[in-house]
Image (cartoon, rainbow, N blue to C red; front, side, top):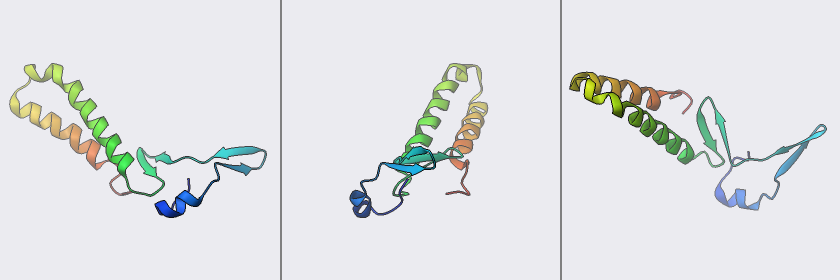
Length: 92
């Protein structure tokens, strides 16, 4: 993955890098510890992934919400969402 401004990245035409006896393909985004890093370090892909994950967790809680009290449901949603939002906050 090349890191630079969009103008500089447009000038790069290398898609594979020879390394010993293999070829390594250059990618536009990489995932490290569930943090998605794109080539401009804009975190757009990471925000999308976190939102997708949070929405998935909310959909998983929907079937059991009728059997929980309001306070219990709030606590459960807060635990799931804060876990998703705060994960790897040190890296960011």
